[in-house]
Image (tube, rainbow, N blue to C red; front, side, top):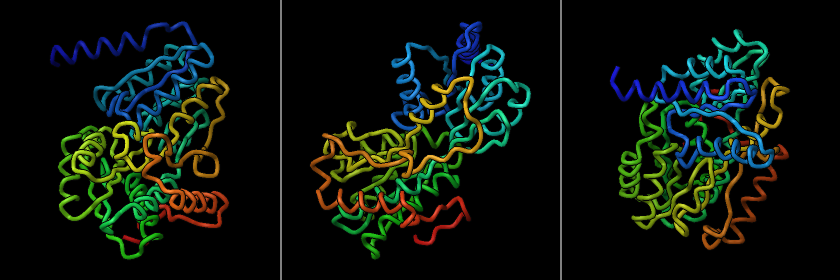
Length: 329
């Protein structure tokens, strides 16, 4: 083990053990890092909002390696943290092992289902929100070609892509949607340079709007899109502010609400399967002063109408996760 690894390990251990006597909630970030401006940061914002509103405090840790997942869970549980919230599907295996050993501790995992009596499994209808921003991309595109850049090539990210393509095609059936994934390992969530390279490649193929669902990698996508004079679409958190007038919108995945709700319920956290979609404010699109000039009244009206239909069940968006297939490409 390198000296730096020892230091990081010691730091993590201290963060986990500090305040062990207090029954505070805890949040474990995935490998993309707390300030990825996307998924993890949304989780952090939810925890921070809870702390500011209640005057409470919470414990947290940013993982440095895959090996720390189970270690972090066990140390927080031993320290009395309750509930313990995990940001990301990759915690499933560790949680499956740990949950039974701490039956009096409540756990919440985001983006995966772990069937244990003391676990809340929170999943999102990302395909619904992605459909809406796909509609917006098609309406904003002048070339008829738009792009999608995903992070790690997994079914969850294919779910984003499939919803996006359906929304694009609903507006322009003849549109071309270029799709690329950043990689097949967790490093794909934090590779802005690769995101930039993929964006340039898609621009070369005619894309004039690119949707990034890639965690920290998306920072490179949005930056390059702005530099090259095309529009981008952010994800998870509202990323419109990062390049005002250049980010068409952001697909909001309300991870912040999932964390806030879990922390609010505390040790009385309601466990089981929890779905967050358009019908209950779990997903949506961002409209603010940073992108208002890009979204016409007609565009907003059509997207809001579709959102209402999806929420009511009148319009069904195919979920890639149901059969690992997309009806349109």
